Image 1 (tube, helix red, strand yellow):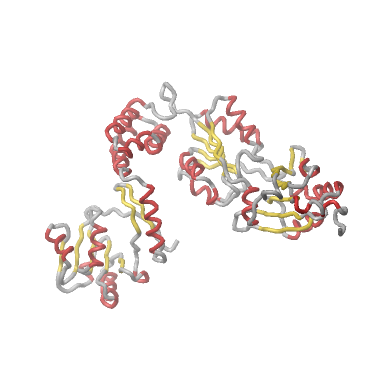
Image 2 (tube, rainbow, N blue to C red; image 1 turned 45 degrees about the vertical axis):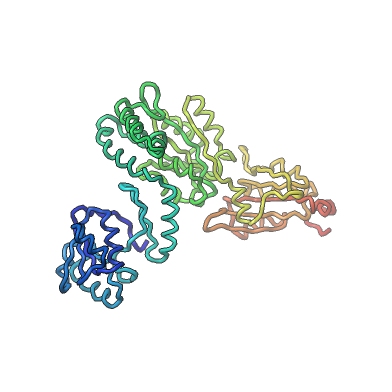
Length: 469
């Protein structure tokens, strides 16, 4: 980032606006949303600014402008509409030690005015470092539509109740309270106009400590979310997955994740790396499972962040069985599985009506080590097989297809690190698979896709693998 976003305390601080026309009026409208003291420097004011001055909402100073007028101000806007005058006033403001914004001249700006979505006290600022103001306005429009008009009222009420909540509830209970307020019935009530009823419910929850996922005695229950992070890139996790990361007390995550995904989590959530590399299982599955159970039993909101989809070769069954056995509530948040990510990287569908009507997801790494899955030994026309964790089994897969004599015209498509910046895409004939993997230094994190379209079924019966037809 070239600029750093920050919200400044403006109450009682002085903001100088040099200029008396429409550009200056635009800045005055913006700053008057805050509690700052606004001073306009100009020989004359347009009707809007003159009216604001008459109301006492801004101060108007005429006469010569020098550095002294900018000393001690929180911010200075230069907005005369004349590039030469603006440049001269910029020099004076800088001589006075001010932080300066010059309208429509980003190269003279210490501070850049963002597009703002105002749900006071909820304020969203959108900036593009002056490069794309139209894009900033588009984002603003989308946020205006997604944030309900009364959201600021709910936030303001929550602010007034924070002291009472802090006095009566422990930190974990307070987090759960505010999660309930902003995710559940209270927010829905505010949105529909039932502010009084929502306020009563919130006050009662603070008084009794019973709300949302509380048991009958008011104790907060722990829970586990098995969240699919997708194939790696942070923009392929679902919105629900992001929400669970922002609610989590502790996150247990895998080694193949894009580290940027963790930036989506609540800042003070504990992050625990439980990655397992081939041949180096520093966190055996049994240890991970017991850790999830223990954390939830302590009342924590737990996220088990897995690559791809938790239900596809993610060993989630062992974790779910343990959670059920200990009566711990859990949910599965689906993710984009690696086979789908690989298909997208290849720019093709994994199925094709009339040609590929069977899709098999299988693995080349079983509990006993690398092996050839039965889907390869029984490959039939109209089938596409997506192989997970099968790089180490590549020689065995080639031999299995050679023995069946049903791979002569087949092509293997390889996608390593799908949808990531260092993604690798390759293809080869079946006999060349081991060498192709070696040529691209692919050791793991790859999908192998072998398809037998019906349209090629005749050609595949003609000769042993590796021989010309």
